[in-house]
Length: 494
Image (tube, rainbow, N blue to C red; front, side, top):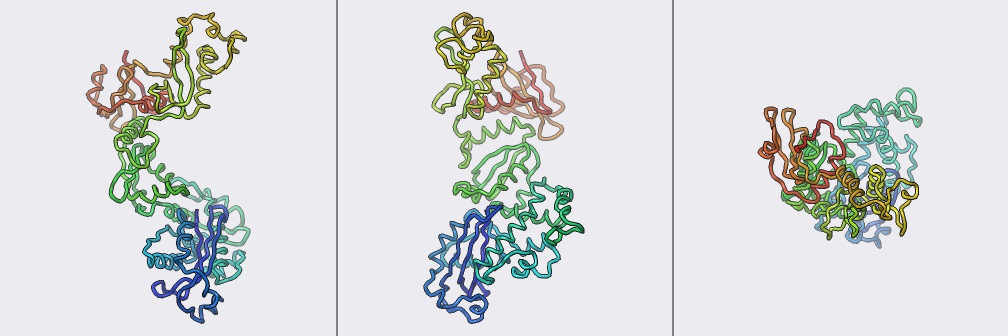
């Protein structure tokens, strides 16, 4: 979100002069979604030359609210927004001074539409708001009044965003020239239909960088993000005291953190989190599986304030195994319950996915729809009626015969009682990662170099760091084993 702001004042010095009028237009990146404007009583006389320029007289502001009466409104409207103005330094410095006089540190990321216009619409004879709007066809009413100027600035900002959107979502460091071809094609000789020149790729890239930086956490130096690795691992967000407040993982740490900050947060909690980030550190893992396992361990061990998902073992949905009174093994899908010690064979994102997954296993292993909870009936299931079910639902197939196929289905998604190692990429080209599962229990992970060789399971025990097994770990491994990863192999020990 962007807060486009314009002020009228008693003069040009924030330390001496005061605000006489304020206007705020909230822009969501596509359109204006909210607005506010009011005269303010500056608590001093308005100089005649200011009245001549703005038309604001002492009589007009005599009954207007003072700044402290609207300060809360200004804070709430602009919270989580980038502060945008035409010559932003002027307006921002006045607001900061007014808030400072109230004992409040007003801080927002800023963007200047003068600078953006120079970059994106080069060659204009003037970049003053009035002349620029006239030259590019933006209506401007009530010049030198806060609402009129702010509204015109909002319209200008919309045009500038439309230009940058022609080259949005570019990978880090990528040349923008090919994407700008669509913009340049709109008009010959490097001009658009409205007569404005098309910006150079470097200018567009610079503006995109400015917008991205404006969405960065205010306490976080841009150099920290610039130095993040484009590699697989875990990362830590720290607050000003150095405490870890969030742990994450990614196959590309740089890109993932850019995604964190590319989103314009709106909720108070999300904004609080973003504004708390003062530093980022990381550890490379090489392997995506190791990153997942290590992240889960760190969250449970460190309990960061803003990690919620894995601080307790809670799964959205899963496939469960139960045995009924007749001895039939029944697969069932359902919601996971944090109070239930029962561990699902596999966890899935929601009940719809769990149901679909179970339908697939029923069809593949010729299981009974009724016994799997997919066909509610007091009689035989639908598959029995079309001769696809062998009759477990009506007692025609024995539990022993039916359960053999259930066990096959379970074996296809579970690693219970199995011993194996997952060998994957390491942190460098000269090493490999090792994840050890022994008798169905996760034992830990480690790294080996090219000189390492192993003939038996015990050899791998010597090179891992032990970690605790739990529900989350089991689900991570099960889910990971479902998809073959590039550069990764599984070595099974009978």
